[in-house]
Amino acid sequence: MYEDVRFKVNYFDKLALRGDPDSFNQPYSPTPELTNIGSFEKCWQLMDDRWFMIKQGNYLERFSELFIFRLGQALGFSMAEYQPENGTIRSPDFTDGAFVNFESADGIVGDDEDYAVNFEAFWKLSPELAEQYLQIIYLDTLCFNMDRHTKNYGVLRDVETGAVLRMAPNFDNNVALFARGIPENLKRTNDKLVSLFCDLLERDNRALEIVEKFPVPDRNMIMRSAEQITMQIDQEILCVYIMNGNGHVQDRIHELIQPQGYFSFL
Image (cartoon, rainbow, N blue to C red; front, top):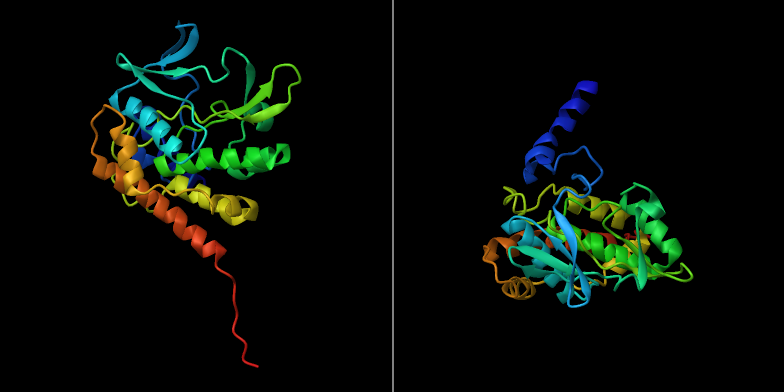
């Protein structure tokens, strides 16, 4: 048994060392977070009296960040804004110069990235926060964001009272989609993130009822989101990848909401 566990752990060394996306979908780790905090060069710059986070990344990492911002916007989700900036990307400070305080999720759940634990913690704060959390991990699932950890999502608090106002907008999506290369498994079968998300829906009917009402991206929405970015990528593969992931999620939702009928022979 111990040899099997060690063998499964070693599947992830390719992903941790070289970013091999096909190493991610192995039946071992329950967490999608596989990179170190702050592994990308970044800095804050003041531009036109507003602070911007400037972040480096390769071509596909920058595309991922920009595209997911546009797709999330199209879905009506709260998204941190991203803009191209001379071979980097920039994002305006979503606290508006500390007008509100950002508390990362590790202040609420520690380092526990389990979806069910997080959903319950945010639900206890408010059902609206729980719904906003689901929007983040739903988009992570569609776009295969392997790097969601408890420091890159959280809540915004009132600076005077500390009261929770809302979930912070969705940010930090550069290790997603094809940032580490195009996966061989475009059909998204045995996809780890799809499995984790669907497991949450199966375990918690509150989450299922919320996600059932989420907007669903179609081909036109994906294409329009990609076309808003002045970066070239194979849009057909992009559509296939996202829609296949969403297809698995929607199939599971439909299975779970079907009434459990029975036959009577009386």
